Image (cartoon, rainbow, N blue to C red; front, side, top):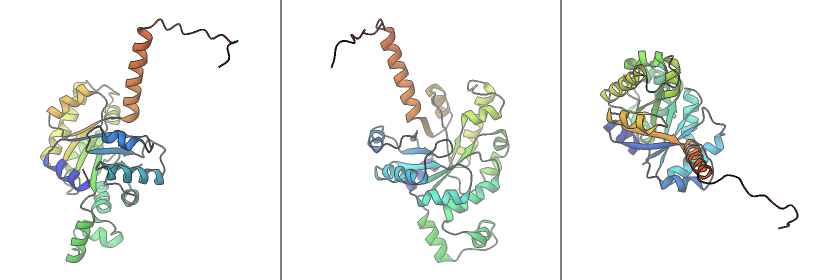
Length: 269
């Protein structure tokens, strides 16, 4: 998918598949392409990737028709535009709690490169854009998606207001941060946590935007997809690497004596 196809699929309620990618290896995009995904989630909030590397990753994945969506370190409209200029097809804004944050990000993602007082007046409905400019901006930004991270109790409480924004394309729940904000750290089976997730799913789909939960545990994800989530944002390259090799080495150790070989120091290779 490209960004425009991603937006259309998410808003239409179609199933979209993605994973988080942390490795900047030049070999990795071709490997990821074999997973039959629609998009990749590239994180700059919790990983030490620089601007140049993120741009390289975005352009590599975009060339393979995997829409690159980047989580910026903070919900800042200037960071959003900078990341889009580097090749991202979408922005994930972390820890959104106020409608005003969404308006500013919507201006950056959907109206770039417009800035300043003219943009503010347009966003606030105080002045209409000239027809030629409005047409130009719509075409220029048609493939730029806006995802908002819902990760806290205040975000849950203001979700109805947040979803009034016409510029959100998808809600992405951060389950770890949300569980902590609820006072239930990593208690993903707790009924209060599950109800919070289902409420986000229901409200997001009713608002006509995509919704997903970035999670590692498939039994939770399957239940939430069956409840209406249409973005399957499963795991990451590092998490999957860790789980797979841990299980494989565990099996090897269990099915062998694990004594190892004694090396004769007098033997030279």
